Image (cartoon, rainbow, N blue to C red; front, side):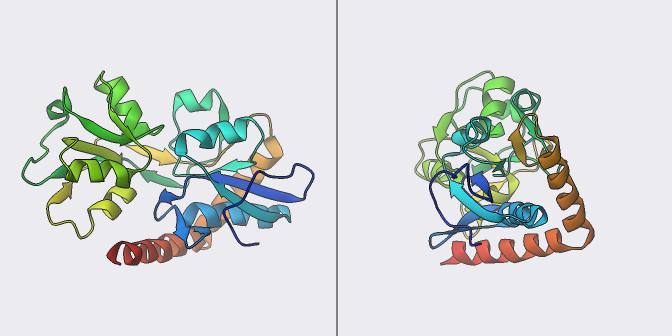
Length: 236
């Protein structure tokens, strides 16, 4: 039942496979070789509701949704923001958290407003709504990275002027960094679980699970536990 870094799901076995991108604490990150986090526990709860075993795999973020579309995984959960474009390709569960993206900046180059971002070198994680914000809202190309941490490393090295990221990984990247800070939200977003279209029974089970874990306090418990664990990892 452990969520381990593993290969593709066997379509003949009686399990639920989650696809994720395990560099997004506290939602998903690696504890040694084990994938852990809030999203992992949500998907594990779905598998338990269905009476099936649970497995998970980590890939680059821009491969997460294609994996469920192609049938290589049953569920996609990786802090995935619900967007109209993504709705064209996958079905989303009810949201389980409201969030948004922020700007990470150096204190010697403070961020004031969105107009300040135009024409600047901006680091983002590839395939995310942060990337979409730069291409769609600012009408320019960002400096793409594989993770928020990689983008922030470019910021610290002076290769980009700002980084845009979701609030939770942004907080994790800035923790302990005296020269960096984060802005208020520049967008409002919601995370949900994504599945291949045309699976009403699976979608129903996911929605019921999310409602249950919110009502009985499990979701709040996981948020607290995995935020604390990921903070400790950052401190090491």
